[in-house]
Amino acid sequence: MGIQQNHHHHRDRPRRSTSFKLRGLRLRSLKPTTSELPVVSLELPR
Image 1: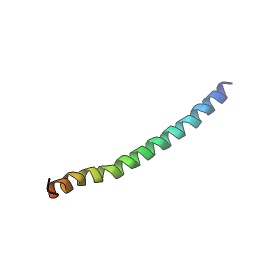
Image 2: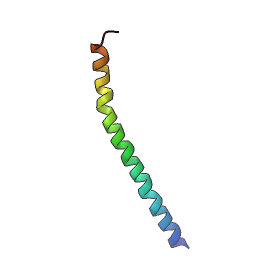
Image 3: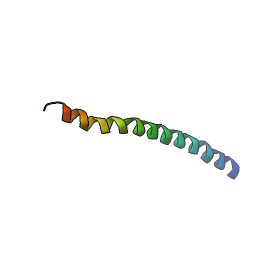
Image 4: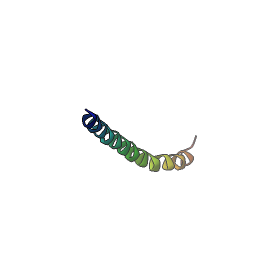
């Protein structure tokens, strides 16, 4: 029984790690855009 519970935990961990990786990739991809946004907003006339 304990071994099965450990397996379940192991299965949950990779899913969470993958979601974190996806979020990290999204954050990394968003970081350059956010850094470029202020420059574009400054260049564009308000």
